[in-house]
Structure formats: C-alpha cells, structure tokens
Image 1 (cartoon, helix red, strand yellow):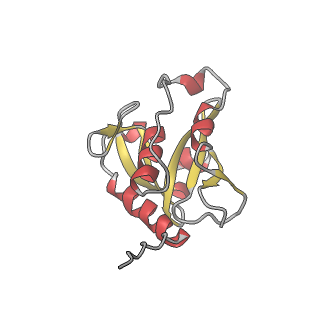
Image 2: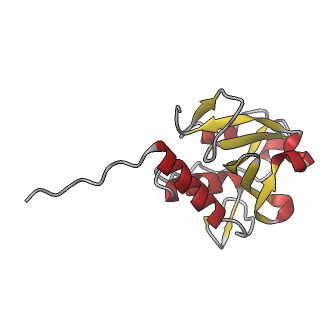
Length: 154
C-alpha cells in the first residue's frame, strides 16, 4: 500500500500561516536578540522566528549586533538579514505575510509582518513588546517606510 504525500501548501496557505503566527507573537516582551515567543524578541529575530514557525524558512542565527548599530553605521545589516529569505517586492499593494521595512537611523533597521492591509505586527522597542500597529496612523512608521519585501514572487 502506498502512502499519499501531503500536498505542498499553496502560497496563500503559507501567507495565512505567517499572518496567524505573527499575530500569536503580539504581547511578547521586547528583548534585544531574544527569539522566544512570550519571553522576548526584537524586530529582527521575530521575523526569523515567525517565518520559521510558519514553515516558510529554516531558523538561522544572524550573528551578533549591538542594539544601536543603525545610529553609527550605514551598512545595511538588517536588510542583509531579511534578504537571506526574501526578495524585494516591487508592487504598490503588498499582501498579508509580506514584510514592511523602515529606515530608523542611517539605514534600514526595522521591520514587521503585514497581517492585513496597512496593519503591521512588529517588535517595537518604544512599546516594549510585539504590537499590532496601523502604519498610516503611526507617524514613526508612516514617515520611515522604505518598502516591502516578500518570500514569494507572486
């Protein structure tokens, strides 16, 4: 008797999983280099762990980074981490499960997961936890948005 293979998830199913997982991180305390849901995370580690928990990527260690590196360097360290598992999405209308990136300081240094049109789940140091924010209603986000990246080409 042959076993049936479970069909691979569709892009829409993977996006839905990313959104579901991202929402489950809301309330996790902000902790530099933390990566454990409910215990602590930052905006870089949360992206890695959200996409890994959703089964889109394998979790990885991005290496050491100081909490204020973006104030002193122009090197695109954060973007380099994100681009290890995404590609720039050149559309005006990003989809749930895509990543919004922001320039705080001298380079791209913040990001979060779009969970619906204009709504972002992100680990935000000023809020001291992972929060759900509306980009257009949050001046710090609205004024620093660089663009959107995606794990999928469509």
